[in-house]
Image (cartoon, rainbow, N blue to C red; front, top):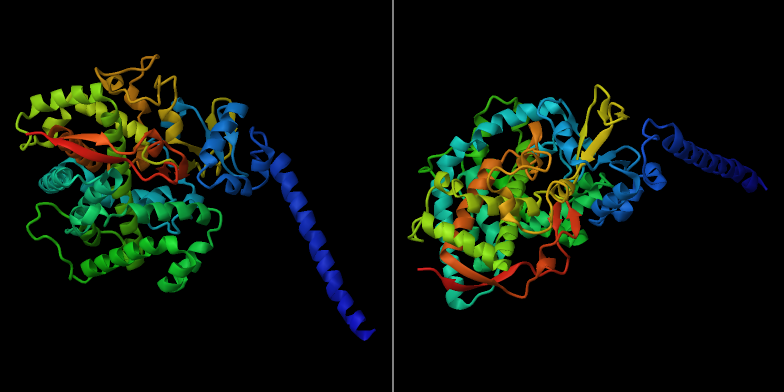
Length: 510
C-alpha cells in the first residue's frame, strides 16, 4: 500500500504532463492555422501545421510538391508554418534586389551545419563584409590572370580525351568535367592542385563527396542537431554510422590540412603563378581575427570548393548532352568554331571566344537548363513588412523562389524544356519587350548573386570551345533521363540509378 501511495504522485505528474503537452500542441495548431500572421496565406493545412510536411517530401521531392501547391493555390503559398514561396518570374528582381538589406533564412545554413561560409551567412552586413574581401578575386581582371592556367588544364583535358579515343574508353562526363573544375578551383584557392585530370578514369574528383554532402543536408535541414553530433565524434565512428559521408570526411580533412599549411606558411603554392590565391588573400586581408580562424576558413574552403567544382561541371555536362543529341545545332556551332580558329590546336583567348554569338548562345542555353542550384532561395526582411501584389508579408517572414520555376516559365521561355540556343541571339526580348537576360537567374541576382560567375563563364567557354572544335562524340547508353532533374538535393540530381551522361570519342579533328 505504501508503494502504491508513493507511486501515485508520479503517475499524476505524468498524466498532467501528457495533458499539458496535448494542450500545448492543440494551442500551437490553432495558432498556426488561425492566429499566425501567415494564416491568411493560401496553402495546405498540413504545411501550415508542421515542418514535417516538408520532411515527408524532402527526399529531394519537395520542389515538385511546391509546384503542385502553386497550381492549386496560386502564385504565393505557405509551404511551412514559417515560410512563403512565390512562383512569379517578374518578382525575382524585387525579392533578390541589390538595393535591399534582406538576410538569408537562417534555417538554410543548417543544411551544411555552418554559417561561416559566404553563401550560408544569414546576416546581410556580415555577408557584405565577407563579400568585400572575396569580390576582387573574382573580377574579370583577376580571372584574366588565371587564364594561362585554364588553358594549361584545357590542354591536359584534351590530351586525356584524345587518349580515350585511342583506347575506346567510355567517358563519364560528370567525372571528366568535375576533375577539370576541381583542379581549377583548388589552384585558385590554394595555389596548387591535386591533378584530378590525371587520375585514372578521372575518378579522383569532388562529385561524389559533394552529392553525398548535399543529399545528407536534406536530413540535417530537419534535424540540425545531427551536424554538431557528427562533428563531435571521431571520423572513424562517423564513417561506420554513415558510410556515404566517407568521401566528405576525406575532403574536409584534406582541405583543413591545406588551410593549416597556408596559415603556417608551409603551403605548396606555385611561386611562378601570376595571380593571387583566395586563401592567401583572405589571411592578408583586414578582416577581424575571428574571420580568419581555422574553423571559419575550413568551412569557407568547403563552400568555395563545392560551389566552384560542382555547378560548373553540371553546366558543361548539360551543354555537352544537348549538343551531341542535336546534330544540326552542333554542326552550326562547329562551323562557327572552325571559322574562329582554323587550327584546332590553337585556341583563342576568352575575349575572342566571348564574341562568338552561337557559342555564347549554346552556353547560355545550357546553363539555363542546368539551373545552377535546385534548392529554393529564401530571403528575410527583418525590419519591415514587404509586399507581393496585394499581399502584405509580415517582417521576419522567409520568402523564397526557385530557379527551376523561372527557367521553365513558358511565358518567358516558350518550349522551355528544349535546348534552343537561337532564343539568345540578336538581343532577345520577351513578349512584353523585356530583356530575356532579366530572367536568366542561374547565378542568382542582387547582393548575394554567385560571386564566381566570371570564373564559371571562363571555364565553360574554354572547355566547350576546345571539346567541340577538336573532337566528335556519341552518347553511350545514355538518354535524357540521365540529365533530367528528378531530385532536389540542393544540387539538381537526375534519377538515382543513372550511370551518368556517358560518351565515346568517335574522331579527333585534325
